[in-house]
Image 1 (cartoon, rainbow, N blue to C red):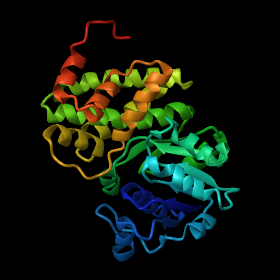
Image 2: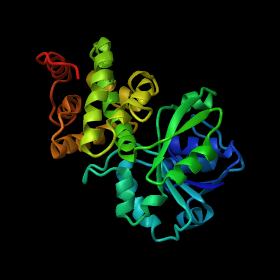
Image 3: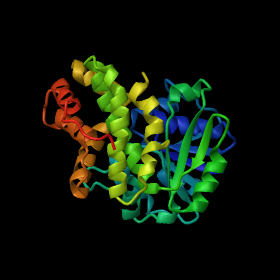
Length: 319
C-alpha cells in the first residue's frame, strides 16, 4: 500500500519505520523548519528508530498527499484542525485518513474525527488507530495489540488486515465514540498516576485504574457510545503503558509536576483534562478524577491534598 505519514515526531517516525518494514511504500512528511524533520533529514534516525532508504522524507505536503492511498496523521491533537483544513485543498478522493493521536480539541470539546469532518473530510474516509504500545518496546521486538476504528466497517477491516503483523495485532473497533474518548482520557489518568507516584501514593494506582475506567465509561455512554469501550484496548487496555511505564510521557509529567521538576516533552493529558472537564459539565457526568487533575493543573490546587480528599470521599456502592 502507498502510505503517507504526516508528522515526524516519535510516534509518526515509528509508524513510518513500522510500515516500511512491512512492505508498504512510505513517504513521511514534516515541516521543513521543524527540529524533528531536520534531524531525520540529516541522520535518517531519531533516538528510537533508524529509517531505511525505502522511506522518502518530504516537506512538500501536496506531493505527499498525492502519493498516498492511506494518509496517517500523527501530530499534536490540538494542531489537527489547522492541518486537516490544509489537506482538503487537495484531492482526497479514494484516500483513507487515519488519525493516530489521542486527544480532544480543547476549544470545541470535539473528538478528533469530528474535527476532521468539520474541515471537510468525508466521515466514511476517516479512521482512528489507538491502543497500547511504546516505541521503545516495539523497536526492541516486544509485541502489543491495538485497534482500528471508524464508522466505515470496510475501512476498519482493510486497514487492520493490511497493517497487522507479529509485532502489532490489530482488533476491529466497533465504537468510534468510545475508542476516541477512551484513548484521549487514558492520558488524564496517566497524569493522575504520575502524581500519585511523585507523592508516594503508588498503592492508590489500583483504585485509580478501577475508578478511572468507571468514570470514563459513564462519559462514553452519555455521549452516545458503548460504555464497555472503556474496558477495552483503547482505555483500560492502555493503562499498563500509561499509568505504569517508565516511557509514559503523561505519567512522567504527573510525577515531575508533583516533584516540581521541569518536563519538556508533549503530555497530551494536560489539554485533555481541560476538554474532558467541559464535556463532563456538558453531559452532566461526574468525573471526579478528571476534575481533580484539572484543579491541580489549572487552579493551583495542592496535588496530594486533592487526592487525599478524592479517596476519602463518603462511602458508596462501587457500581
